[in-house]
Image: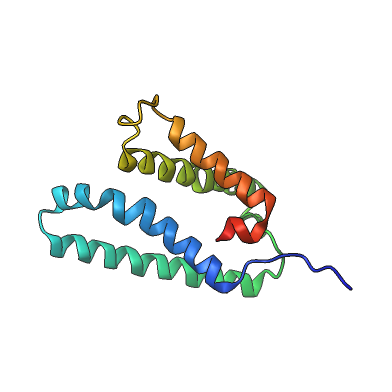
Length: 147
C-alpha cells in the first residue's frame, strides 16, 4: 500500500482564509470603523470596497500562478518578477507579520473576549496557550489540526 502525503482540501483552505479575514478583521475592527465613518452603511461600503480590492489581489496572484509554475507563492512571484531581494523581504514579512502576527492578534482578541482577567491570568498567558495548543494539535495529526 502506497502512503500518500496528507493535504488540505478546498473547503479547509477556504475556511482558513475566511476565518482569518473575519476573525482578525470584521469582528475586531467594526466598532472602530463605525466610530470613524459615522454610519453602518459607510462601514458596509468600506468592507465591500476592501472585498473588491482583495478580489483584485487574488486575481493578480492567479495570473502570476499561471505564469510562474513553481511552488513558493509570494516569495517566488516577487523573486522572479521583481528581484531576489524583493522575494526575501516579501517572504520574511509574510512569516513575521502575515502569519505569525495574525495568529497572535486573533489569540489576543480571543483572550479579551473570553475575559482572561476573570480567570486571574496574567495578560498574554491564555493567548499563548491557545497558540501552542493549536500548534500541538496540528503537529500531532494534520486532520485534527485543520478541524
